[in-house]
Image (cartoon, rainbow, N blue to C red; front, side):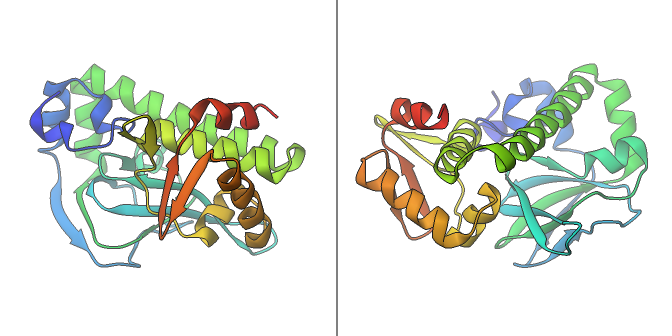
Amino acid sequence: MSGDQAAFPRGSFLAGLPPKSGSALLTLGTAREFAPETVLLREGDTSTHVLLLLDGCVKITATTPEGQLALLAIRVGGDLVGELAAMDGQPRIATVTTAGHVRARTIGQAEFRRCLAATPEIGLAVSSSVGAKLRWATRRRVDFGSREVKVRLARVLLELAASYGIAAGRHIELGVALTQPELAALVGAAEPTVHRALAVLRRENIVETGYRRLCVRDRARLAAVADG
C-alpha cells in the first residue's frame, strides 16, 4: 500500500485498492473542503458527480415513507460516495451530509466513467463496493423486523469495527465518532432502548464507551451476541 493509501482506514474503499490504482484515483477531480453540516449530495437530486472522501466523516440519510429521516450509514476518509448515480444516471437515493470538516475530491461523471473503463481494477472495486453497500442495507432491513435491539446493536458494531476499526492491543477502537442518537439511528431503534442495550454490553465488559468513542474489548463475545 502506498503512503497516501496507508492513511485511510483498512476497510475503506481506497485502502483496498492496489497502490497504483489508488494513486491514479487520487489524481482525479478537484480537491475541495467542506464545513460541518454541509449537504454534499441530496436525495432526489439529478447530479451525477462522485465524491472521494479524503478526510473527515459523512452521514448517509434517506427519508422513510412515513417522512422520518433514517441514518443509513457512515462513510469516512478513503470512501467513495455518490458512485451509483454516476454509473446509472438515476436520481440520488440518499443525502450525504458532513459530520465535521471534510476534505474530498469531486469527480465528474465523464471523468469517473473514463477511469472505470481504463482501469479494470478500479471498476471491479467500485462494483464490489456497491455490492457491499447493498448487502449492508439488506441486512439492516432484515434485522430491523426480526431481531431484538441488543442483537442489532452488536451486528452494527461488528460491521463498523470490521470496516473502520483500529487495533489497540487486544481491543478494537471504532474509527468513527458517533453520538448515541446517530448510533440509535443506525440500529433502527429508539435512543433509550439502544442506550440500555449498550449499558448491558458495557457491564459485560464487551465494549467500553466514552464521549463519541467506542471500543470493542471482546470481539468474540460481541460476535456471540450478534449471532443471537
